[in-house]
Image 1: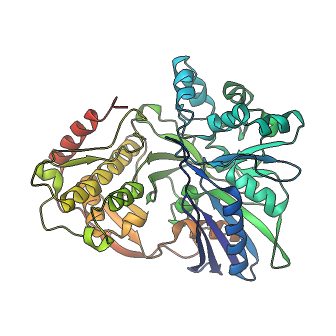
Image 2: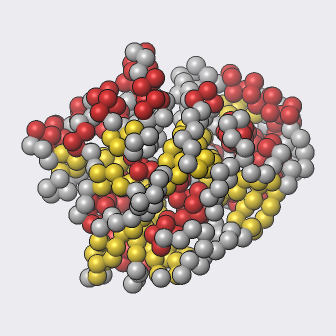
Image 3: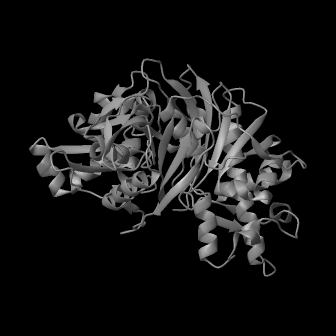
Length: 470
């Protein structure tokens, strides 16, 4: 069976082809533009990404099934009749509705979102963004009166175009703050809280099943999987048992741990209960998630500042750990995610002196991202019994210094899989109806060498100084 996985991420869209469950390869990649129209706003052009999806599907050649993974919380609006977008894609990083979230928190609404959606109040999730579209875009208001307005996450728009069905999957719906996590359906009270008209939302389907037929190169191909990218990565890592955990280091860093059939709530540790996946006819598999808002994006920002030019320059360092020398970087460039959920925090270097070099600053940055990822794993370990190792993927996982430092901070083995395309692999496996057909092979294992309790305490102190800054 030959399947194509479309990996639609925050910065690019890629086609990955897998044959008979064996490791495949990326055969097409398209990068899309990032738009920053105002402070705290991040947008994508839905038509540009839709075009890229089409090009990737055409490049994949003849396939038996298609799977698509998506950005998760990024969302938009469009006309149900013409399928014309009436908004840009408002990206998960966008913070235009922070003032709305602050008001809802002050009114005590977070108890409802945690009880029904399992999520804290945060502009990161889709609900307040969808409400913003309805409240601020005249064309959306006209379509609403005409019963022609479609509101949804970006996957629903792409599926609507590809298959003619206005649908989303349960993992993506669980990231909106509008879905009841126990029933797997849109929640009337949540929709009323955010002023999102429920009749404008897509039908919720299991992650693996019938999403309709897509016309590719003149042939109709079934779309059999749709899933959030982080959940796809969890599946691709082979994390199928309760306690299995992975971290994906992309734009942000996202750790997920499988909790199986148990919906595990952990508000005191800032963790998010979520749907890992669901097969048609089966109960959902649940997970706990914790995210770091800036990981790869922080490193790319450092590069844009001229702190380094080539990634080989930050794979090893001559001097001892920056944190051992009192130099700390807190990667709160877009606030703090799990376990703090504090958008008032700002990114900071602490301990700079006249002797600090660009290499020192990047060394501290890598360590800061590792410290933040370790905070998330520590929070997970307080809730469930984790496996004795953590698997990692994403851009930063190829950095040997970073992975060794993470192993030291966590005092756990860090395993770098041989297959770097685990998000696309998970999507392809889901599309093919397979569960870990090929056992994960390790490219490299990092074992703890040094204990870093003092450095962890120093980082915690530094982090506390970044809060209430904005």
